[in-house]
Length: 311
Image (cartoon, rainbow, N blue to C red; front, side, top):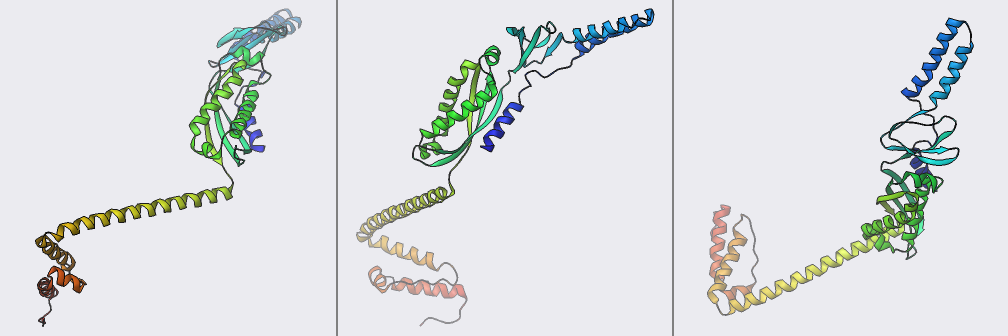
């Protein structure tokens, strides 16, 4: 719960204060002009009434000019009743009659929200962190239809996330993030549209599962990889055996090819210095490798530089 509360506080801090006083250049001029005129009248007539009237008039006129930034809209109430939206730029209100209840930010706003220790459909507790991208498309509804639209959007996103997690298995939650994000966006959008808010996108940042379950899933994945490796090795052995059987059929009807293969095997085995090759006696008799082995021994002796002659 502390993380959820912190995310809500951060989301609300990104928005302007509903009725924060704002100073602007036009209001300063509207205040100073009557004050200076009143001071001048007091100096010329030596009557302090001019200064007092100038200060009161300046305070009254300074309440009228307001400036809204390019991305803001001001919700104006007249004697408590909604009269319209103002901005962006300079606009005027009737002091002490009109009031600005809320400044609506119409930029894209990001809100982080989370679902902690939420059970999936297969009863696995998970923690999910996500980010919501939303924008106010109707400032009037955002100001009049809900008490605090930013907090309402945050709570709607959190409850929607918990609802979807409860209807999703752990495997689907880990593998089908895009589908879950689309469903979450539609669900939050349906709940927030009456407030003048639309959701642009939802992105899941992280899915945290219990450590014991992580170890079990890791062992399961490792066992699956070992099984696949053994199956591939067995298939390779079967393919090699089939090719050897096909080669044996070819060599049986062609003794010359068999002798050439024997010569190639000896060459490949003895072309490096100091190489040792073991040949079964049955292969020597069946393949006629006696003379070839003697010639290979002489060649090996010449390569190693030995002065002994073979017996």
